[in-house]
Amino acid sequence: MHKLLPLILAPLMLWLAVPAHAARAPKATEPAPCLPVPAPHQVAWQDMDMYAFIHFSINTYTGQEWGFGNEPTSLFNPTDLDCRQWARVCRQSGMRGIILTAKHHCGFCLWPSAYTEFSVKNAPWRGGKGDVVRELADACRREGLKFAVYLSPWDRNHPQYGRPEYITYFRNQLRELLTQYGDIFEVWFDGANGGDGWYGGANEMRRIDDRTYYDWEETYRMIRQLQPQCAIWGDNANRADLRWIGNESGHAGLTNWSPMPRGGRAGRDLLNAGTEDGDLWCPGECDTSIRPGWFYHQAEDGRVKSVGQLMDTYYKSVGRNSTLLLNFPVMPNGRISPIDSLRGLQFSRMVETVFRHDLARGAKVTASNVRANDKRYAPKHVTDGRPGTYWATDDDVTNATLTLTFPRPTRFNRFLAEEYIALGQRVRAFTLEALVDGRWLPLKDELAEQGTGLTTIGHRRIVCFPTVEATALRFSVTSARACPLISRVGLFLAPDIE
Ligand code: FUL
Image (cartoon, rainbow, N blue to C red; front, top):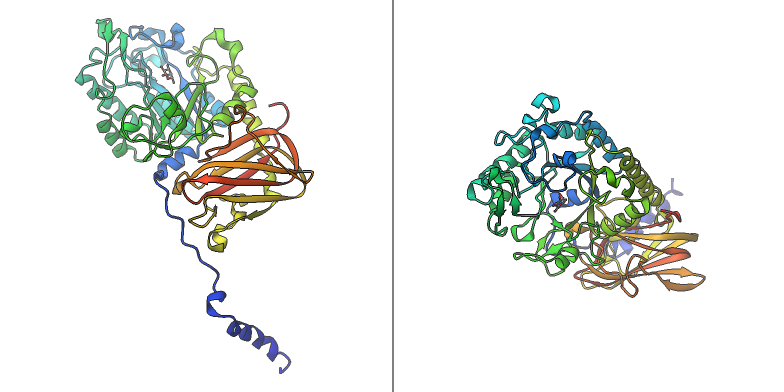
């Protein structure tokens, strides 16, 4: 027994010998939010990354992009409408949800609205008993997708468009969509507003002041009450949850802040880039179509985007702190074309191929600064695969370097980083260097113009560059609004042909 005594006493003596302040692991305070910060439903929305648009209406039968509002409802007669097929195609294309054009500018409703005769209830399809919104909402749920609606504020059919009565009509329709079809993840209101139209036979030009006419504040209140988790597309003046990115080609700015200024009409440059001084959280959404048009036109069958073009769009949207809203038009028979469906599948396979093996996972990660040396904020969190953990620096450190050292020379051509945006978007600029043959080589974004440095990160930033074979990578935040919080860093080797 006496032989065991020193073994038992040793830890006790050691404990007594170490002063109390050193015995305790350092404990850092949680970083303070860097305002503005997103609401939880905005984070959930941005985490969707990609979701689909479906454009389908009477335009599908007239070959138009914008119906005038006087088209006969008898034209709407898909022979083989299959919302399960749409949902499957979208899921297989990597989409996490679908936004359906429940009503486009022509005013025709894909659901049997109680407030108009210009809808599926007066079409031959399903003997006037059909409801595309219902069929798609159900199909989405069965395929594990979220569902959302596009309701055009501009209505070229409605006799009262341009007058106050129309706003009541518009809200009544919105209420139908938000109360009869389960959870709606987003409402999309188009920016195209006012102009010529049928307007119940008036057949004239109607101009509205879109800053005042719709009284969005009231409409937003109604949406928040009926569907608190729903993300509202719109303009920052009215505290929308997300903003149009300023073009329809699917490209966010190289610099893309989620904050936006309060009030006023944002121009396209501001929509594209956001601003670090903004006091509202209003991230960008990139909408674009897989074909030139939003609606189906057989003549465009040969112009479906290539996998390379879709990957480029992916890097310039999801890879630039935005979401990608990719449109799939429906053909007159009521199905998505096999050309688009195959292309969508090839695209999502390519995304999977590129991002399957994260080469950062095997690296040793060290940092120039760790918040109070607390392991809760250690650099290893950038590769732990958990979105809720992050590497953080001390409050006064906005210039910091993370070094990834590989066990063996490693080839890669894609860098990915994510900020912990729940506490705000912080990083203004960063650099990347690869250790190649003992020399640090700066890496440039090959999708950016010459000389453009690396700027914002936000929800996710992906940088593409020619393949390097390196033994280490240095990621340095060179400017930030507050101490950087980085939740993920990834490295990938994309195949030569994308
Ligand atoms: C545009 C509309 O005018 C197009 O028809 C389409 O719906 C697109 C998504 O938004 O502004």
